[in-house]
Length: 214
Image 1 (cartoon, helix red, strand yellow):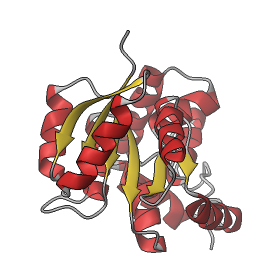
Image 2 (cartoon, rainbow, N blue to C red):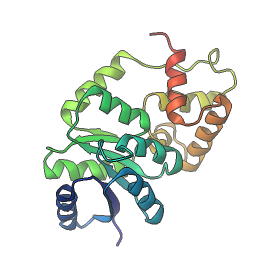
Image 3 (cartoon, rainbow, N blue to C red):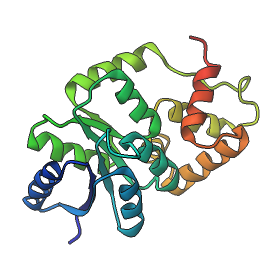
């Protein structure tokens, strides 16, 4: 029986080997591809059935955050979990804006990482404790509001979806919260991008946040 299919992208061979060894010991998660950089990760996602992309932030050429942004647009069915040593606010929030569903530090315990993979595969969001504190504090202080006055071209449901995009939610998370199918959610996102004349969900989120009072 096929379990959760994982791709890992990291430019350190020893780290990839460690992840491979860890996943080989599980019965419900399998490593289907390994990439040494962001460009290879995108190519391998296209060549394999992948449920979760486990990405480092800093990689040669294309960063994990850039890969997350590309996957959010091109493969929203793939859940992105950032696994890195960097816990700074800039990296964390850049990853969330790009569509990452989780952000876990490399010094996490084995069981914590496995739980994170299973969680994002179910459409949940998960963060290392130190990261979660800052994320919760950020969203407690800032709740983007998407109003008819700011976006008259959008339907009420499209404004609901845009509001959640601005909060960094992935398509599966939006679908779960609004009770929509993933396909319907994807259609709403496409319509929003077209109506707002933006390239991707990152720009759409920036438009939504820019319309809100600070």
